[in-house]
Amino acid sequence: MRTAISQLELLRPRTLAEALAAMSAANGARPTPIAGGTDLFVYLNAGQLAATRYLDLSRLSGLRGIRPGLAGVTIGATTTFAAIRAQADIARRLPSLARAASEIGAWQIQERATIGGNIANASPAGDSLPVLLAHDALVHVCSVRGERTLPMNELYVDYRKLSLAPDELIVAVTLPWPPPRAFAFFRKVGTRRAQSISKVVFAGLLRRGRDRAFDHVRLAWGSMAAVTKRAGAAEHALLGTRGTAADRARARAALDADLSPIDDIRSDAPYRLEVAGNLLEQCLRAEAMR
Ligand SMILES: Cc1cc2nc3c(=O)[nH]c(=O)nc-3n(C[C@H](O)[C@H](O)[C@H](O)COP(=O)(O)OP(=O)(O)OC[C@H]3O[C@@H](n4cnc5c(N)ncnc54)[C@H](O)[C@@H]3O)c2cc1C
Image (cartoon, rainbow, N blue to C red; front, top):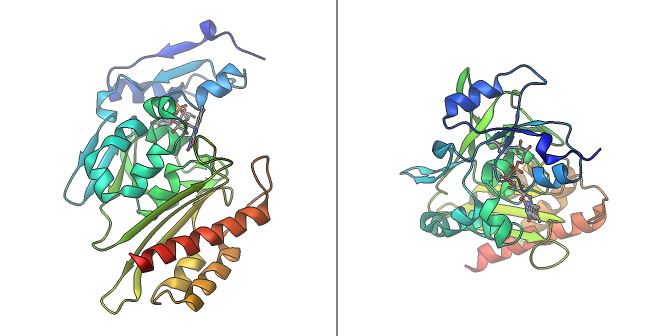
């Protein structure tokens, strides 16, 4: 049933401690965090959310902002994609993240949508997620028990299920700067060139050693399984090779073992698998020609 917005309760903490205390309430009384609201409001407006208590994260200034450091960059959970898209260090050193940020929805969405919301929403089509996986991102979460850090590739356990306790908030994500000379690639394929939800989304990060063989390979896909995931068999097939046509063919064939796309309203499984292979080929060819 559609819920009148006026019947909803909104908690507006000013400090992280207040927010975490609210999250530590018993089941039923625990509020649902709301950041940009771009995912939540769709369901709220359709009357599909049972929750009536919400926790507004927008006043927690410590959760917002981009902090570049020597080893990498830490991005607060409520940082918007508009801010990420515009940040100079990110544009220069993490071009795939800048690109993903600039292809999420339209500008209006990018002004509100946050990176923490994208991670927590856990859609297999979330566009920043393959980039975070390909860059070995670390996700920082907090509860009244303290802070802990999880590698991005341990965050998703099943369709829209995160390995977080119900009272934990995502507070930030850290991306290490890519290794020197690494090549980064991002491509989203949707129904049209802009403003569409991904049928397939891919991020790759590759580096060659002195002998020209690949010594660092990360290949991550969205919309190709119940969760955004790295393609371990394809990565393994490329590691230590020079990416010849035969190496590329072996990696592409390995994708069958890595990915398990479904048929849904946006696309079907055979098409998705074909596109995933094409994107891998495109990435490897672009890397070889740079
Ligand atoms: C028109 C439109 C177009 C869109 N296009 C795209 C697109 O192209 N690509 C894409 O990836 N997404 C797209 N989205 C989805 C959405 O914009 C993103 O997933 C966005 O990043 C969500 O962030 P938010 O801050 O708005 O999250 P919210 O809606 O505020 O929250 C989303 C979920 O995350 C939880 N949450 C939020 N922050 C935290 C936190 N810090 N800790 C714990 N839980 C938290 C909330 O409880 C909720 O369950 C689109 C949405 C719309 C409406």
